[in-house]
Length: 256
Length: 304
Image (cartoon, rainbow over all chains, first blue to last red; front, side, top):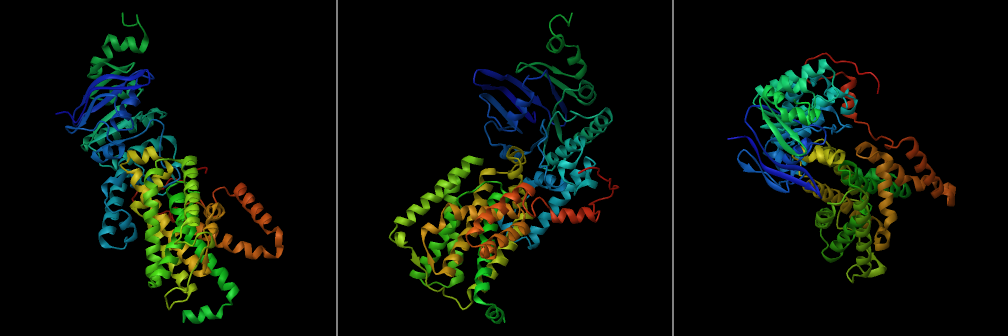
């Protein structure tokens, strides 16, 4: 059974059909990349999965249960972590606090915990969350910057911090929206290794990315989106040779 | 011994000190919803008046012990805030501000027309049922409110509030139930405003619905913004300064509000984050000491 399943998922914004009847399955333990020209609807698919928009039609199921129409916080709680294309860190807070916020769903104590924070049970949970946060920061090699303000990090590290924050959810599935955007080749190589490690630690990875070299070198499977519809889906080398894909990227005639 | 200390301070100074104390309680309360959760409330005086009238009526009708009266007026105010917070906290920014403003006006008009609050004549509040003097009671409550504020800021609950303040979409994607946390922080905020109002009423001995108008809300907001939104030391400082300012500027007689206004304008131009705002003291110290949670050389960050 697929970990995540999009079943004829469609969303319309007024007259515009941004995502049109997409069927897609993400298998447990794989790295799946979603590619496509600008405006194809890739980020919209991520927003549908994470509940920022409810689908107009069709269904989305995660671990066999429908999550279509649920609020984002419930979907996150079920085990889907994400990063954002336009970085959305809590810039005025420290790197560590950012990841601790990501670990929110791993704790239970609320207002009562805040007021009774001297109780051993609350302190134990706080210690556990802190440990988890440091572990996530170590995975993206940012533990030594725990007390920096997030907004003071260089761009590439901010992208990695977003990944650490999403990992703190301890997700079964992580959605990475253009994780390599704006990185130099060296940073991209480091990121590639990091994503592989994350997968090897048991987290399924679903990413949107424009850098073909990065996608082809990293993914087990690639799906292609064009004008809101899925036009191809398969192993990287199959997709690269697919005439429909070449046409979508380079225009009619290029495939011949 | 406290009583001895209290008696050794002259009544005029003591009155200023109690005013400062009540100002701190109210400002720290507003800081929870506006400073931590980032939701602008322009109607916090309404919660103060709910607490003041609830407290006054409890003392008049039941003669309950003062500490119980304080607690109950806080709880009643929190319940009112939770009830109106549920629908209006779906709004954000300017819309929420206008809504809280309207709510405050409604509360004022209701209290001006209710028989039980003695309509426009206001209520004379009898002396509270307690052996502790007013200054000591206020001091104890101030200390408790400061502790609670610091506790909330440094907890899982407080982190969720700050996440909502900084980016609602990111916060929700991290599994934070925004609606629930907003209502809870609104209720905590109102709780503090309620106990502040209760103390205010018993301290003055007379309350009138018109005392809790828009200007009172703005007073509270100025304290929070002047000291630094979201910073507990900043808010305590801001509240102390603004509660005492009208007295210190008294020698300027009719010009004092002019100077007071000018001070606020200059401050906002030169310290837009408030006097102590935007300073995370804990992180600052940890960074200065070069503390790091685990291994790895600490790279120096250039530029700030």
